[in-house]
Length: 305
View 1 (cartoon, rainbow, N blue to C red):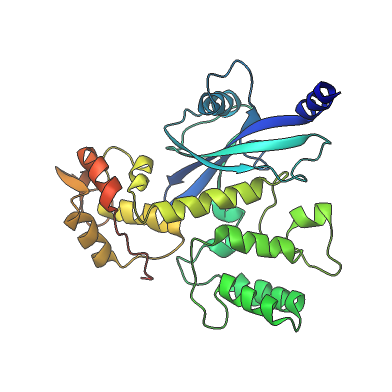
View 2 (tube, rainbow, N blue to C red):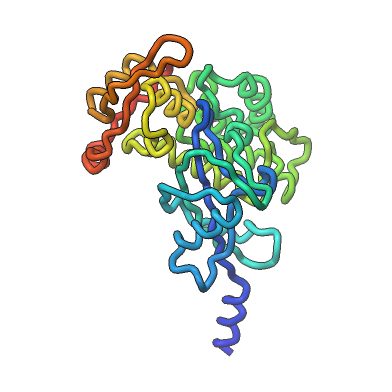
């Protein structure tokens, strides 16, 4: 009987591999999707896959034709209600960095990640929707509960609280708990809740995307992984634009340039970019210092411009 129970449990479990693949194009952070933007590339771990990461790469290339470069394991999701079917799904997610290229198959495409999280883009200051939609909706949800009111203020930077760009997942989960996102409404609607702007995704894919954004925002402060998103040569302005796009925050230009040059992260190519506007010198990443930077960190200050 024990064998039969074990077999039944095994048959009810499946392992899914899911990818949060990020690029920055023309100063906008983009994520690779399938199903016309409704889902992240994903597929089952199969016996023929040499490893979890090999399986992930296989699925992404099969579904989108996008080759993967830098990849790291992100998180394992195993909540009992995370699938629509009766099967228990364990999802092993990965964060990948790429340069946007043409994709094909499975209704694949690149989409700006602020399409899914419009409240996360603070490059031009706090989005109007926070004061206009989110704060009033959370106030209604919190009522007279001081713990809820405090949590909402801290998480969304309300009532003069500071904004923490790394709390992407906490903000999404608070909106989910308050019944303000369609993913919650699909499972357990909250009476009277009004859905906020921000495109929903299949299952818990938007939660997984939030986890990937949060990881990347934290990571760029201590490892120069943003260079994985850059072309071979680039200007310091383009580099700053990329970091700001990922962080959703402005950077003080002179401080940013001083920091990059003081840490010897780039070297001059002797070339200039002259297409429109003031000529700018072209630089490239000094890859030989990667191991050193991984130890001491980039100390990147994400301060408002």
